[in-house]
Image (tube, rainbow, N blue to C red; front, side, top):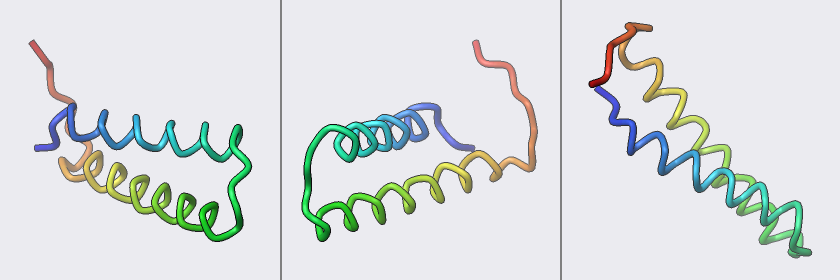
Length: 60
């Protein structure tokens, strides 16, 4: 089962990447690398979320 901390850590990094791309003026190479990292993280989050076949569980 995916841990909330695993998903949160990835989502936090995705938010950092978005902010960095929005605020900083990075060169094309760096922007491409950040975009690729963000895409990979999004793929991982989707896999973590779909790993339980859509089961809803109650957290204590």
